[in-house]
Image 1 (cartoon, helix red, strand yellow):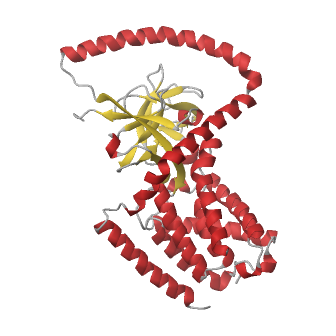
Image 2 (cartoon, rainbow over the protein chains, first blue to last red; image 1 turned 60 degrees about the vertical axis):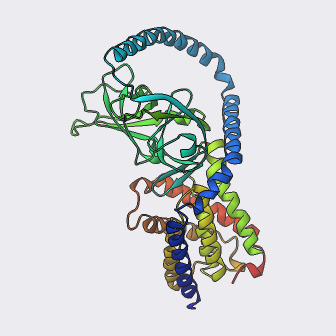
Image 3 (cartoon, rainbow over the protein chains, first blue to last red; image 1 turned 45 degrees about the vertical axis):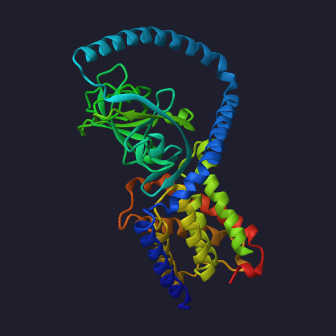
Amino acid sequence: MSHSPFKVLFTLFAVVASLVFADRYFFDRKLTHIGPVLAKKPASYIFAKLESARFFLNGLANIRSLVSENEKFKKENLILVSRLADYENIKEESSFLKNAFKIASRFSNEIVYASIFSSQLGFDGYDVILTSGVESGANDNDIVITEDGVLVGKIKRSYDGFAHVLMVNDPDFSVTAKVLSSNTAGIAKGALDKGLYFDLIVQSDAIKEGDIVVSSGMDFFPPALIIGTVSYVETNETNLFKKVKIRPAMEDVKIGRVLVVKKSDRN
Amino acid sequence: MTGIKLFIIFILALMTDGLILPALFNFKNSSLALLAILLPILYMGPEKRTILWGLFFSITSESFRGLNLGTLAIPFLFTVVVICLAQRSLDIKYTYNDRFSLGRSVIVAFVSVAFVYIFSFFYGWGKVGTGFLSPVISLTIMLESLVLIFVFNIVFNNKNDYV
């Protein structure tokens, strides 16, 4: 076996180590940030167009079920409209009480519009890049949602010109969650290709496949953000907790265009 | 010419991984870009040109993903050291006459799964993310390896492409 590859490797180790040193101490770790800044505009355009194409093709594939789905959605819409009226009422009361007791909102009304333009599987989760960074007002730990109120994730790290997003199905992601219209609550944790696991659901808690899971607001995430749908429930009397999987709601919506919800300065 | 072909394949793999598969097919568990970095080393052998190209692709991938310099490049170099040591006993690289050999393709695809995990071991500085250790991801890596090997078999149809 020729020793040539090892000589080459040794030289390359030295070169890369020098570049890493220079990048860290002279360029403030910004040498490789040129890529996302240059690519974000064309890439986000292509990403959005491809997502639209996917939804269009899915629509064509499901064209036969359109009529029955339409009837089902009309009924659901009526239920939601009546709930909306209750919600507006409760929101008004909550706002009045907060003003009366001078309680600051945990989340500001500031929203930053952004686009996701790359999503790749990495060794420690997904490398998802947002077009907005520190200069646009998107900061670390700001919440990323879609216009429909679906939770996409939070900003892992924000730089000049772009930001890394920690998606809901990333292993490092967790959020306190509850089942909609139920007292069942737990912690939803990302599990890559398996979606999310809904932990701390005891055997006596009522939960079934199809239940909608939303953020409970007991942590740094706003309440009532849609996380996903329960896709699997395993009950085992020998275990303290049930094994519950959640299918992320962001799989069924477009994530090309997102909103970044900024936290209040008091947090 | 080999380098240009490799570069085009790498760019296509990067765009497929990061843009086309997640946006058009809602498939986020692809590792094509990583395989486009590692597979030429396995396919053509750990030669100077393949190592240099692999390093260039690693740095390009870091740039596209917004990762810090060295995040992929250093684990790549460590992985190549392991490949060099493994080549002494495995001899898995292709020759011009071996192209389209199904048996060799399957073997290289299996080996590429192992080396992706070795890459992740060096990436995590001794730890492999438990989420990444998934049968679905392993199977995806293997199938994508087979696809890339097939592409290499067609594209590298010149004896000069092989050592």
